[in-house]
Amino acid sequence: MGPRGGSRHHAPAREEPRPSARAAHPAFPQTAGRDSARGPPPPTSAAAARGPPGRRLGPRPRRRGGGGRKEVGGGARGTRVPAPPPRPARPRPPRCRQRRDFSKAMSQAGTSQFQEVIRQELEYSMKVELDKILATAPSNELEHAKKDLEGFKKLFHRFLQEKGPSVDWGKIQRPPEDSIQPYEKIKARGLPDNIASVLNKLVVVKLNGGLGTSMGCKGPKSLIGVRNENTFLDLTVQQIEHLNKSYNTDVPLVLMNSFNTDDDTKKILQKYSHSRVKIYTFNQSRYPRINKETLLPIAKDVSYSGENTECWYPPGHGDIYASFYNSGLLDNLIAEGKEYIFVSNIDNLGATVDLYILNHLMNPPNGKRCEFVMEVTNKTRADVKGGTLTQYENKLRLVEIAQVPKAHVDEFKSVSKFKIFNTNNLWIALSAIKRLQEKNAIDMEIIVNPKTLDGGLNVIQLETAVGAAIKSFENSLGINVPRSRFLPVKTTSDLLLVMSNLYSLNAGSLTMSEKREFPTVPLVKLGSSFTKVQDYLRRFESIPDMLELDHLTVSGDVTFGKNVSLKGTVIIIANHGDRIDIPAGALLENKIVSGNLRILDH
Image (tube, rainbow, N blue to C red; front, side, top):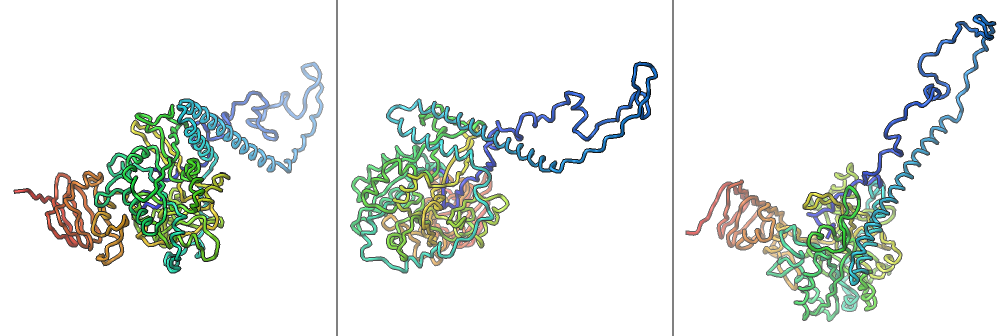
């Protein structure tokens, strides 16, 4: 789905330097004109050969007749007349330096004008290609395709216009203390008696555009089984259904799908037809990938099946604002009396509806409602690449590592200076989205995501992140929440944690087991043999007991028998060609296991 904010495993792709449109396109020379790249032309006359006025190049030519006199008349020996006195040196014009500065400015202006011409040519070429693509759309897809391509055209225009890094590091400041509230302070206010009426103003939105390919699965990631054969989507529906039943409310679920996940998701939604949750879907935009060299789309028509699948991409979750608005669902929910959406990644199992945060939104202590709330949590060493909230030009602003100048990346990663990061759990006012969208006033930095396709073609994707819009909203706020609200499952290492006895499952929500002495989550690193979910499941006969585990590293061909217990720090390494079978019932506490260990059935 594009960039995944709030992920300690998937930092947004580093933004490629874009000093100007010319740097992004080979058609731009490095100087203003063609001749300047070739060097100065050769002299074309004797006057030109003499050089600039006031200076003579080469030896002074001898005067005919010698001496300081010259002959006049027609004979061999004419009358000699005195030569005129030498002309006094002409004083240097007092404004010579100003003229040089003016010439330099004119040269720079010429370069700027040249860049603008090339930008216009690129935009025109892009328009021609997009028009050709749109012409291939069938009538039933024409309107939708037109909106998508218009949105892409605007994004491409901004891409060509922007220069240099998207943030000035010197302007970044720590946010004011009152702009990031501790969760404990929010929770201390308690809950009102009419919490049901507050809940009825809420809509839960899950970002469901990603595939499970990084974990070796086909289809939507939300359909991967994560606990007791429940998928991410199952757990989400169970959570909201529990809310609606407990408080007799009507909190709907909205899924933002992509063209990659829409069909498969809609087939699965039939199983929830009898649950007490209204489920709506809308699709995020479908944008064309562009050739890195020509900056033109690689797609030739609007189809996105078969070989054309690689020609298109969903442009990151920052597309939620435009797609939500264009779908008509935003207006429908406002008409039903809904006021806020709670947005999160569907693979973050800690992102459940929090009644205390919702009450703070609906009943603010100062009487002024927040239009945008971002949940942040304290950084650990595993989260140093996560986006952080800063104060920038008197506004709260999300800064991602992709936007940071290279000279300041280490400073950005500092846990002591930037102590929090974005979980991508967001609470946003529906009326504010509508207002800003209609004014075209939602500003998000462009993330340039380079890709290499299977055939070796280098392309780029222009993306945006949903949290980057925080600076466009009024009265924005950060809330520093417990780590338990950030439980993403990006890899099989994460999957092992949530499948283990570290967590208990209740009404679709995972909570840390009370038997765990420390509230921190163990650090788990599974090797490449465990990357795919099928391989991972095959290597565990049952999930080990991990209640007292601090650190687990597994590398190579390793399998686990039933009822294995892991405690403290455990490192298991099977070298190439070796295999290690951890026997059933084994207890490993502060152990390093290496070499070759086979357990064979007798």
